[in-house]
Length: 303
Image (cartoon, rainbow, N blue to C red):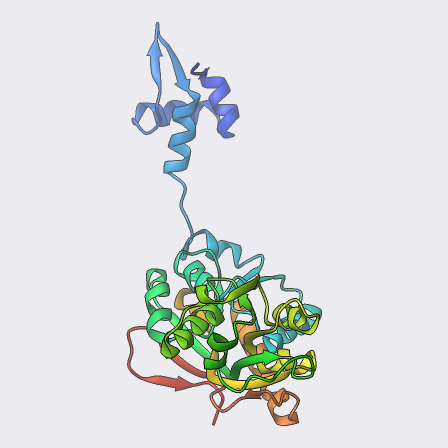
């Protein structure tokens, strides 16, 4: 049943004085009905009128959220997580991050549900998924290797991906929207077989979870990053080198919180590279930027 408010009630409801309410009604700007000389205001129409007149900040609601926190989605990476953790400990800027996978992160940026995304997919795919955001900066951080992870002490070692089809091991998989899952499918396609032909274990949301499953014997082999194999003291055979990047909508790059975060990440990684503290990573392209719609790239490293 529709609820009707009197002039006095709607003024209180909207925190306006009654004179202003009468003015809005007389100008035809506020929904109202005159019954027997008395103005009545259908509450549901008043709510709709308020919503219709809400002015959103440039960049939408997510831009307003950036005043309070930084939302990161996308690919899982041990080194990036370490840098984000350090940023949290030294900054008063809250950071909410989730390893949803490269495709999920890029989609979230494109749909205005994340301030930036971590990814390691092909650039054509990244541009397609983020184009709805109105433009993006793609910031390169480092290169890393993905390959076969297994325990050579517990089983016959793997030396190439084609052996998976021949031996049908328990294969650990990542979540379907992760870049690693997409890479796995592509590598399998190149060898003429599919994931469905293997016994699956998982999916796992991080590389370290996948490596732990292999270490504990829940799986025989999987595809993941080298640092995960090293941390779990497992064998590693490289299959693919990729660049780990951040996708940042252009409308957010000038925001003080985003600027502070990106500057921290670049400075932190430069220091790590100079100290040789991450042997599983290659920092040659650190700071390189590509912008959607522009052919040229720029370098933020100062080289």
